[in-house]
Image (cartoon, rainbow, N blue to C red; front, side, top):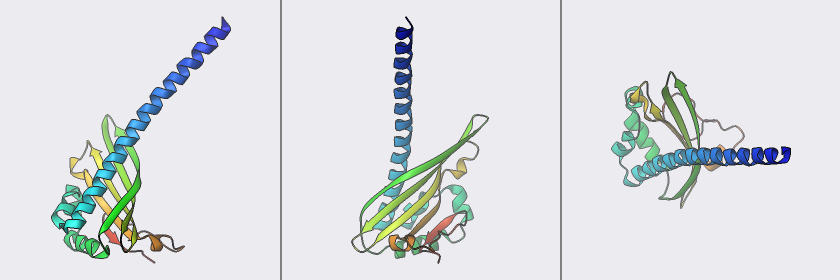
Length: 169
């Protein structure tokens, strides 16, 4: 009887673990798909040299707070050399809930390949903010040459929002 009970318990635990893994895999997969989609839209804006398209990806709050967004978008377009061939990357996420109101931040970290260079690009965005819908969207993009990022003294620029190109050595 004890063996049957132990065996049943193990089966139930494994079954529950499998369900939770599927839940977490689906959850992470959807976040990865969302950041991949945003990265693709950033790349399309670059390919078309469409500053309005790139600007539309930024949150309304960021568009109000970034002083020279048009200039920063131009610098972003000018920084990338060559046509983009491919991209690959990952995402990280964090979320908080305050009395049922959720806020989820996604950070996309991508390697962008052109026929001339390799770039590391990060973007930071809120995919949801129940307390302030004006925050939903990108609030910061960083891009630098992969060779710069690999240097020992490389640091990313850390202001709260904007577009930052090149390493800050």
